[in-house]
Image (cartoon, rainbow, N blue to C red):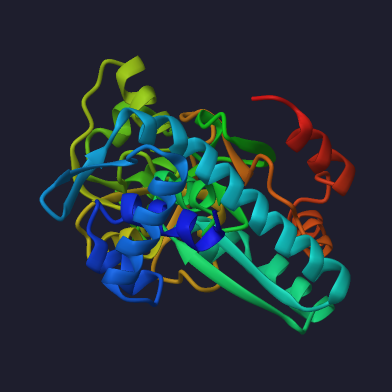
Length: 312
């Protein structure tokens, strides 16, 4: 039994039992992948895959049982490699961060800048996606840490630590009726918002659930004309006059967003919590702990290690 055999099995499953695609990911030949799988099955004395002719079509019952073990062995092998690298090269390596657009665009840049100054020989990779995609990248080992507001706390395989709280703002063009209402001292309400078309985040992004909950609580239906995962897209269409925007307050910059005005909406929508997540059982190199501390100072190495040690 060897790790190449285990990787062949895992990649065949990840690629939907397509050995051609699996071989491309593993940088080998399709017959080579097929041979590695067969050799492992012969050694174990059971078939891992269901076959239709030469094609793989699914996992057998033994295969279903063995898959978590294979994943754990490969995960431990990766941890072993990282541990060796950590001692061999304390200041060099790669740090891969998975984050939603709002976190990558507005929350992470200061930490990335400061970390890069301290660790010039660590290459940073930034992957963006939905909260569920961020979680998937962590679970697959594609990312070291993930940062998002929603979804991360719902995966028992991940240690999701709270980083900071944030609220929403309503954005409008200058001279908008809501700005005039605010100037007269009229408070912003859900009912007032509902008078206008609304542009905001897609479901599952950047506190959207709290926006929906606020309208539902008032039994008012929001007229949402555009949904986007990207705050800059929301801003663009608000500037065009298509509607009123509801965005993360951290995403509004008075100096940059000169064609927009922001109205504090923290009293309308529940406070949101951004979390930083790590897959349990992952070996983190020393500089990863340093990045986490730079991004969220309360998350010291001791705090992170305690969270990772806790059972799901």
